[in-house]
Image (tube, rainbow, N blue to C red; front, side, top):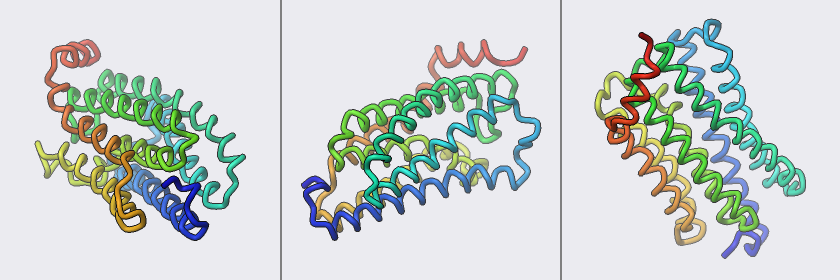
Amino acid sequence: MDAIAMPPRVTARENGFFLAMAVFIAVTVIGGFGSFALRGLVDAGRAPYWVHVHGAVFMAWTLLFVVQAALVRRGTMGLHRRLGWTAVGLAVAMVPLGLLTACMAVRLDRVPPFFTPRIFMALSLLELTAFVLLLTLAIQARRRTDWHRRLMICTMIAIIGPAFGRILPMPLLGPLSGLAVLGMQLLYLSIAVVYDLISRRRVHPAYGVGAIVITVEGMAIPSLAASPPIGALVMALSPA
């Protein structure tokens, strides 16, 4: 049953849940990157300008994600739809900025200390691919509220791996660090799945799509990192 066809009381409760999920994800992003800076592991003042631009665009996207959920909760659908195209514009900017930031991090030897350059590059490419794929599916399903909102949750979960990388004790996890990040992403997704089971008595298939994309994203990182193309790219970018 689509959310539009649900009784008002159920619709309001579901809207409240999706707003809470959006806030929860945003807090994770802000907390992850903020804690990294507060621990002195990054010097924001010495970061190149493209890092600040990338961070500003990603933060704008995250905050707009929360605003969009809040507008749905209030029933302000006209503004929600108009801002949706602003979100698309931010997403279009995020992809090349993400690629530039990843490449320049390797070039300038600024890869986060808990990643090797190969892992970092593979993670960046797969994360951006998952983001584009899930967001495209969500946009295509924008007239089907039940699919759209769930795919948007999956889209956000797919790109918060770096935030978990700054929250989890990555150096202590060693070779299990990638699986730990994937586990956290799937844990966040499971919260939405459990809500569906409680409220709908079944899991919406959109979460199955999201789970497959996110799992492939996480599991493919070691193989892609070890591939010759990534090795050649990292070699070409690495400082002499």
